[in-house]
Length: 335
Image (tube, rainbow, N blue to C red; front, top):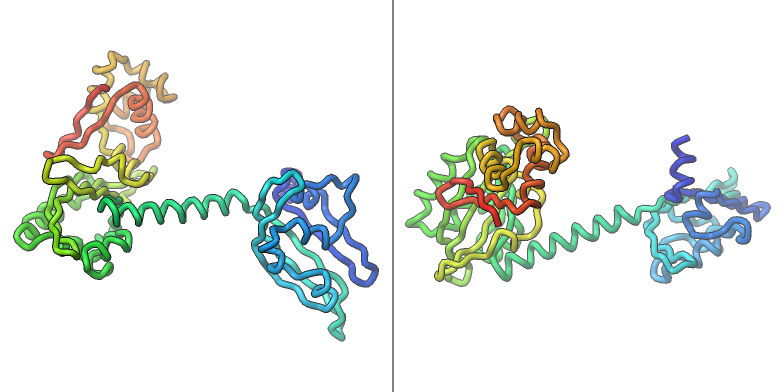
């Protein structure tokens, strides 16, 4: 039933070729996958190959190679449907041979992985953007594991002229010596699951320049309320006092989620007051129950609960901003 369901959706299909009689069969799902009408098109391996992107056709065995007993077990190829639509297929193929080694039949299954491939390409592009951003603006996001190890983009090592492994284990090495100990003691003192850290420090770059950076580290919790380390933002503050705004740092779901988890009941109550909202209004705007809003405002809900993010999102849409101040206070404002 499951296989039929995904075939009906046009996500998977199979083909077979009985070489001894030259009989070829395609499942209805394979026709749908290729964008072809089974009532007017005859199954044929050569037709399948002709629909592939010209640069990808050699990733699958040609009809001549299959007849000679050669086949490529797996490949990812681009398909161009007759409509012009581009899809990405993951193809698994096999060949059956006689005891003497003579090819008897070939078959295969194809799975539409277009969305997965698009996601992979998007992640690659986002990672490149994140890396190039640090090279040009020195702004980035980072993560800290529960063991204290920092995860930084490799470009940070290039900018600061230090080994990536060294700064991952000891990020304070980037700070100029006269500020290093004080900043390190403050940062380590805040590495408890319930404390958000924010501070500024001057760091030396590989070219000898000294830049001041604002560094924010926020605890991160999963939906079950388990501590999962920290997420952070690092961006430069120029001599004029202006800074690369946090929204200019590459989009990062972890840091956004971590920052929203610092919103407590007092902040929600203050935000409602600025909007002149009742608890019921917030419940309706966020799609939460009144009892859930009450638990959030009484700090009785888990730190990683989805309800907190829904409430924050509803307030943000209404014009509320939660601002992290340098003294560690989370301020609430209305735009």
